[in-house]
Length: 253
Image (tube, rainbow, N blue to C red; front, side, top):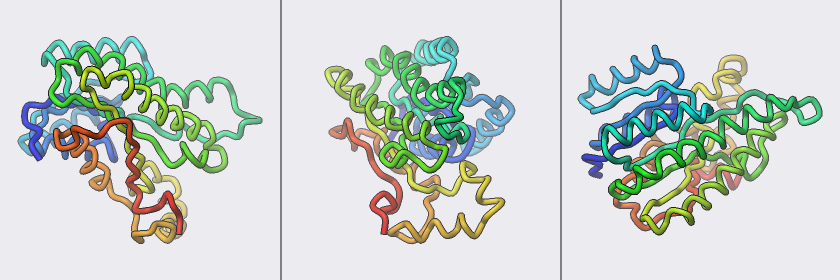
């Protein structure tokens, strides 16, 4: 897979799946722009990539801050003259809350983290994606978009359902420019996203593999390899799709 010369932005790239996506893209020749909010961690991650000989930069900004997103993505686009791939990986559970007790602040914060961020970054990147080669946007969704998530995760599921729809809407809107828009939906991936239950109830965490057809938890590289493929010209006829990366977890066993 050859991604030489491509400029790729990966939001939320300082940990877990996001960093592995950045590493895979760098391995295949992309210039990778890492985004995060922890500048110290961002610098460490950047060093990891450059020590491997990959070309990368770090831009620290909050993906829920409309002005910061617009300013930074414009700066990236102007510097390189184009953007070839925007990977909207940033997101998260944002905490748990049942609807009866849910504050408006919590509701808005979860929607901002998972859905507003996709809108802000995509809108800012479009003028530069139009100048890209095999340009693409790749969003991150979740099984919670279909099953509404577990107790207290209803707003997370709601926001991810929005990601599913905005993925298809963007694909329709941008097809005339040759910009492809897809989403990936990771299943249970062994990252710090699950650090709470992994540290307090490791036996429960391990048991989750019993509900996965392939009999194991996913690894960040399982997701990153699919993202790298979707970034490449080899995926030139794929748009408006959501790809499940969960070892068959979505169907249950």
